[in-house]
Image (cartoon, rainbow, N blue to C red; front, side):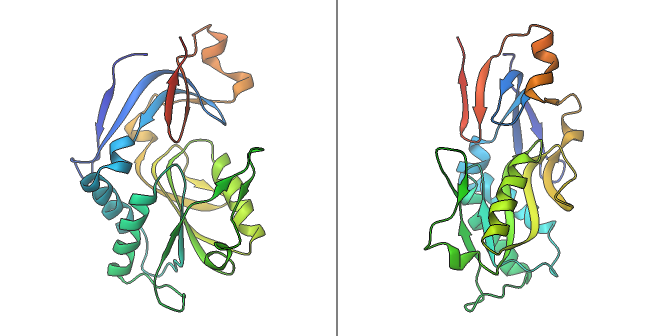
Length: 213
């Protein structure tokens, strides 16, 4: 792996995305950068700034009853709910508030919500919040699970997105492929890095990465 690159948000210079070049294997693809969002998701001030920027991209005409957080984005999700409420984004919940929840993953990889969470998604307008959207496969999986439970996806927000939309829904993001022009994601069976015999540096997912020595 090479040295880390720091990419500042054009909208907010204090929001910095850390990108590490290399060859990384994720659950859905091989990528040539690991995007380290640890502090963006975990540090109070940074998570608040991310939420402010993402909240500003969501139309006040959007209905948001529940924010479903993927990739450990619960802190950003809580701040985002506050931003949306302050901006006048409407919630149809009885208490006129926004729920912030995260799905559970079964050993088989299936996404599920326990009985106590179903009232927060059944018949609700759900905003998906992700750290990164690369291939869109995670969004599709979560979307299918939410559809099964009777939810409607009213929007998709991500800190970084390499795609403009998923399931026909625009993805609102703080960072895009324009911020990392040489960012590439490959199908595991057709990975150019593998064909070039470039060793795999680490296994990566929404929690971080583990080096392969």
